[in-house]
Length: 219
Image (cartoon, rainbow, N blue to C red; front, side):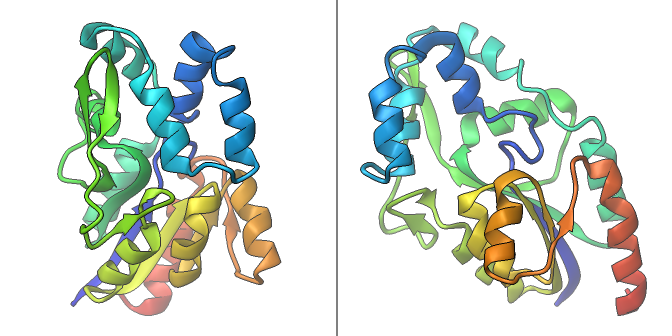
């Protein structure tokens, strides 16, 4: 069993903005108004809403890649991942977004050797389309991927788990983790559930806490 893993959400945690928001603001602001309300009122699932947005981008792949590469990520994340590895840990991404853009953003940033658990997606018909398998061990009818199931699986391979996230799909994996770093709405969700967390806005703030816990745990 390995000592520890640092698991992080992507959209809004590693990235400054969710990719679906970038796409909506640029191409679909008028079109998805009612659909967005239905989503927020739980009339449709996350995967329904995001699936619609991504599949209706209406641009060629070259343009979509250009949009993907406008995603701004935490300026310290690459160094942070390297520090995690130097300390004997692994860094893992879990995302209810799409692997298509995460892979490209990491490749562009020179981030390598990171396991990414996300919704499989492909470019076709001028958009990005989810390719989901209900028989997959991490499948979720709501999010496409169940982050909690991923964390449960990883917990069997690591003595300690750190988690960083910002929104609803991060609640269950955060509760399952030993130390949690929370942004945005996740802070309120965890307060309601009496789960301890550390507030953060950037990964430059996180490393000192990680190293403190590693020392306490004797890693």
